[in-house]
Image (cartoon, rainbow, N blue to C red; front, side, top):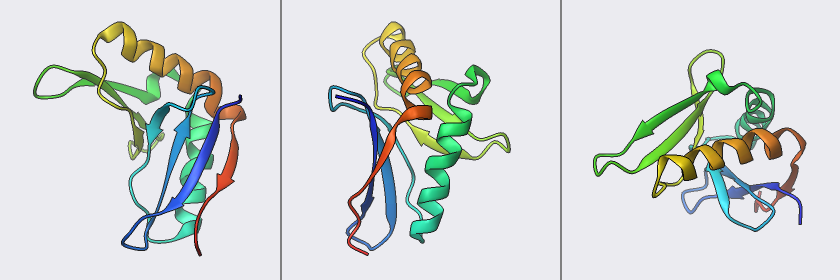
Length: 112
């Protein structure tokens, strides 16, 4: 199964997307957008920025769990990962986004 972006409508009517790996695991989640076109633009920006390692900001949560944020060239956050149990797992997640995002299809699950 190939990786894919799922574009969805949130309960509040806003739009967001997730990048899912071939195994169905979410590897990147977006913020919410007020317009569907904004979310679609966010997906295109993820595809464009994912291959660049410098766009990944590696972070740690308050409990020390590693995670990452993918940023656009202007520094705006495009999406963030789940919390990982180890730095190595986080790096595997980054590698998966780099590999899969540029070629992932978009599945539109919105209600609008």
